[in-house]
Image 1: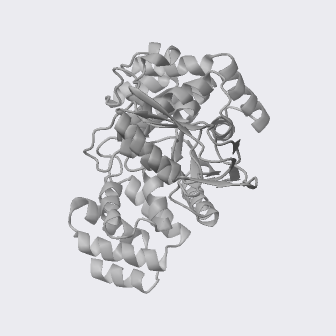
Image 2: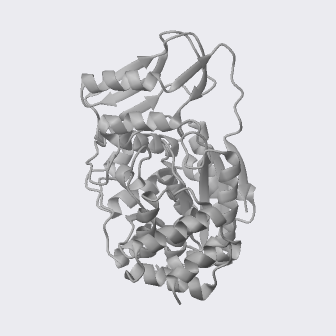
Image 3: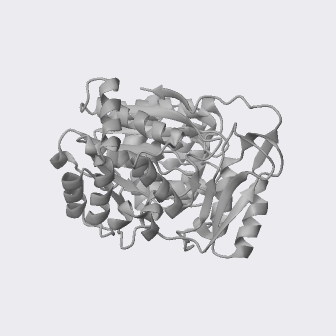
Length: 434
């Protein structure tokens, strides 16, 4: 079998077999297939696409290119959630404790943020002493005892994806749906959960900017997961504006805690209830969606979900007191209020650019080596559709210096469009793919 023949085969639009995909993934992971040949193949896939069966087989070959986590000691109710990334996305910090309080087991591996989106690992490190580095035994023990654990991804989980993604990033092949599907789902399948629920973002702050592309990605990921025998659902949600009001690591942790305390952050709370409902029903922890939703709501009302978050923080070396007293989390020395420049409705917000404001304050990374400031970011006072008068609070900038805050204000004001007419907003949740 020769790589040049397989590149030619895909260039002609023909289907690669299981044996051929095995040869490609194993050969590239081992270093026997050079980058330039893999680049050529991935570009051919971008132009010619893959059949559903081909995408599923590629995913499973990538899944088995390294370690596969065995969660069977945790029983049948293991679940995982994945978001395709967005601004202000602190969903895992709310969802995992809620599901754990309802009897689920979420053994989750997450990453750090790069660019305008924040990583769950970075957010969690806002808790003094918190660590996501742990042995496999400690990982399973925490999931069993607490109901959920969030750790950094192991070095040998889907190593084929690590190599292929790094190559896609420099060869303009990132936005190819079969390659996105295999990249995401290889890691989710290798992580071992029986139920996987996906949050697929669409809009200006999302990777999939159009609703059509988001639904296509959702359908293909659900199809691949089902092909691998997993319980699957995908929720397509809006990312034309940040999720919740807080953008920035410790600020997002505070907001997540406020939701677990019952605060009204409508989009974040609703998203967690919909994702959690799908997890409970599909993993067999609830018979109906109504029952699942009621149990999740009860976990907030009773304080059980908040206590689960504190238990997880304690188990992973952090200070659980910060769950109950958020003043113990990192705080920026400068808090500057940005005011509306005119009367009118907020007609649009550039979610991606708001994420970049936080990044430029020091709350994100331009490169993997950058050290982030956990305390900085932006807290919105109003979102799309709100009517403001000139001088009303628009947002609060949390910064290291007054100069940083002034620069961020100038940048932030460019993220808004105002109108004299109230905008018509599409629903936050665009649909559920099962």
